[in-house]
Each structure stands twice: as structure tokens, then as C-alpha cells.
Length: 164
Ligand SMILES: Cc1cc2nc3c(=O)[nH]c(=O)nc-3n(C[C@H](O)[C@H](O)[C@H](O)COP(=O)(O)O)c2cc1C
Image 1 (cartoon, rainbow, N blue to C red):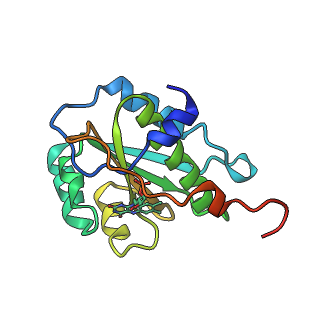
Image 2: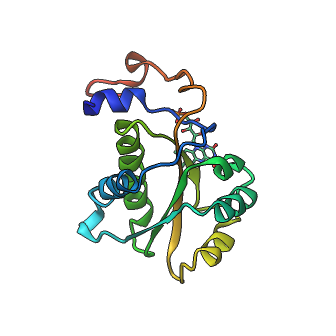
């Protein structure tokens, strides 16, 4: 898939079929994540892939805003060392992985990490030691019922040439 097509097609999907995701596809998605740009080239990240159904259900219970994780084929938790730009770096990796998943025909949803009260519990559950920050979680799976329609602001509304 062309990059711009993947960018246009990607949408948050929160309903997944039971079809499992092949290991090599998960590997390709994480590989896309670790290729993202980072401030000073530090690459502060660690990616924890959760496929175990019991753990997915536990994550779904912890994230009140993302109960659908329990039905995902897998969930990638994006941790970063507590560097100056950890949030930007972790978000760049997250977006790369959303786009890679889309390219591979796998639906996804970005789930909030940093700033959420459940961060500490998820860190303990996944054995992530201090001072790692949980930047995001990515729920992945095959879409059950397709991709929801986008409601995006138009380019003419958001684009300002030279000055706001
Ligand atoms: C930082 C961030 C945190 C998000 N957290 C959640 C979340 O916890 N639960 C959820 O269902 N969606 C979450 N989303 C997905 C957004 O709701 C979604 O991207 C937005 O509604 C736009 O829809 P789209 O992804 O289909 O373009 C998050 C997105 C971002 C960027």
C-alpha cells in the first residue's frame, strides 16, 4: 500500500474479529515503530507485545476507556525511558505502528498511556521497571465490520500559507 493511502485509510477500530495476527506481521509492525525519528537519536523505547488472552482481558479491565482491548488480537505497550522528549518519541513510534498495521490490513486503535491513572498498574503488570513511562498502547486486530468513516477538518480549513 502507498504511504499516503495508508494515512488516508487508517481509522481507529474498536471491534475486532477472532482472527489471530501472524507473528511476522507483529514483528513488521514493531519494526516500523523502532524506525521512527527520535530527539537526539536516543531511541528511548521498549515495546511489550501482549497476546495472552488473560492478560488482554486484564488490560481491558484496567483501561476504562479501552475495554475493547480484551477482544484485540494483540496489544503493543509503548514504553520510553524518561528522557526530555520521551512523549514525542513514543508518539512517533506509535503512529508509525498504526500506519504499518494499516498497510498490512490490520486495524488498530491508539489507547492513552501517559497521564492516565492506570499507568502504574499496567507497568507493574507487564514488569516494566521505573523510570519507564507508558506512552501508549496499541490495540490491534482484524476489523469486525470495517473502518468507521472519518470526520476530519478539511485541508482548506487547517492550512495557512505563510501566516495564520
Ligand atoms: C493520544 C491519544 C490517546 C488516545 N486514547 C484513546 C483511548 O484511550 N481510547 C480510545 O478508544 N481511543 C483513543 N484514542 C483514539 C482517538 O479517539 C481517535 O484517534 C480519534 O477519535 C480520531 O479518530 P481516528 O483515529 O479514527 O482518526 C487516542 C488517540 C490519541 C492520539
